[in-house]
Amino acid sequence: MADKPLRDRIIDTALHLFEKYGYHGVTVDRIVAESDTSKGGFYHNFKSKDELLYHIHDVFITYALTKAQEAYESCSTPTERLYAIVQSFVKVFHLYKPHITVFYQESTYLKPEYAELINEKREEFKQIIFRVIREGVEAGEFRPELSVEIAGMSIIGMVNWTYKWYNPDGPLSIEEIASYFADFILHAVLRDPEHPAAAQFLLRPPAE
Image 1 (cartoon, one colour):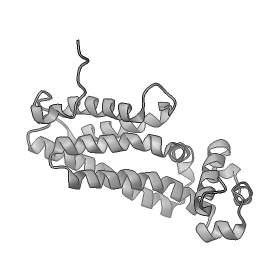
Image 2 (cartoon, rainbow, N blue to C red; image 1 turned 90 degrees about the vertical axis):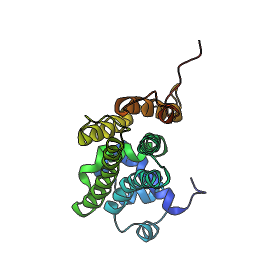
Image 3 (tube, one colour; image 1 turned 135 degrees about the horizontal axis):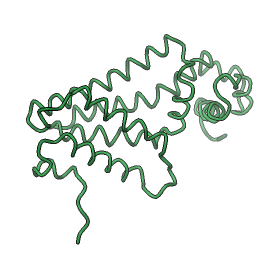
Image 4 (cartoon, helix red, strand yellow; image 1 turned 30 degrees about the vertical axis):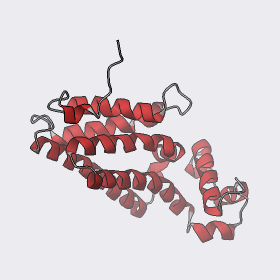
């Protein structure tokens, strides 16, 4: 860890300590000692322990939102957009597993001003998914009877639960898990999963 930049050492140390002892069970002094820095080094990077907790929450939510925005802008159809968003969303749980664990354990301790910033990004992410589903229905790609809100919240809730069971050392890679999620979700929303334009995003049956 000594070779890492100071800010990264502080974050990594805080993640480990918050996950193990809880937010209120860890002092700035302990973070300073275990990250091999000084109080001056800590406060040069973070105004407070509260801001450090906010950063831990913000980094993965910002990543997920940015990837969703990129998918919306770079993909040309609702099916392609939803596939790309689900793929990147699932992978967040591998890239930022410690951050997400701390988020679910300690999010209630975020100060209101920080919680508001996090919630704004979560809402923006949710609205991108709603927009893709709505446009998919309007374009005739997704089932017309779908409730945009229920379908969208079902996708978010299902993928979010990954943090409870995902094991980086498990038998499936995060890429394989993302493909399963995308296949399951697209089969649920597509009007015609057999359409050639949609089939490229779905898992193929094993060869007989």
